[in-house]
Picture (cartoon, rainbow, N blue to C red):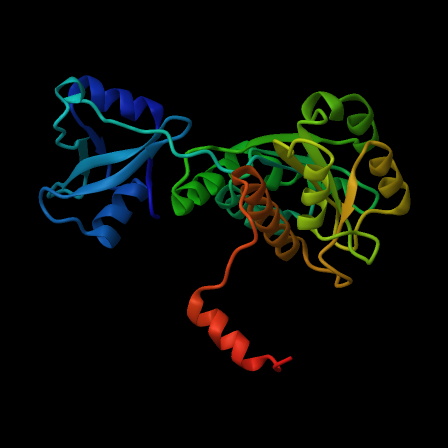
Length: 293
């Protein structure tokens, strides 16, 4: 836990009364007391979903409760209030995911929140078992705590929006354009095999056609990929097929790779970065290995 997330009501209580008490049974209080072990007068990093990140003074009471209060500030206007600042925006990536096995999905909720996705749409597909959607993995009361732990790990306060669609074809035909309009979104179809291009190449091609995309939608199928009918349906909707190669990866491995590569590629386009140069020592070492012309 690299960030202690507070509820909005807890932030309001701090600003109204000067402090808030976390009971001994609260996992955040246990983490502060047993892992962080702050010294008297210390401050810790806190945040609130949808608001921002700041620092709060912490005091561990004799009964194990933890009191959080606003950290000392030189700003007289902010005195007595918890100051939270918005974090810099992450690259805008959203996910259309064929529902994996429930056990896998429960593991993924924290991972997807850590990666900084804005929206996660779970959908059915030919290779998806319908009972998956009646599992705890689609219950907000079960997956929201997992996502909050992911935010605490990544020091992020943006909770992904979650949407469940039980029928893929009607969703693609009726709702896709409204949620992910082009040209704002570059739509990428993630499917194993040699027919797809690398993600960076797809991003560069989109930039070459005009302005770089503001956001990316990744359509990730079940393990084994989408069936041919689904691939054709996505292509008709303007999806560009991308691939990580010929290997058929598990859903969790594929997702981390796809999202990380997409965010890195978007960051490069948005900042207008040129090709990265090797540090001088690394360039000299590489040159020594190359044959002289």
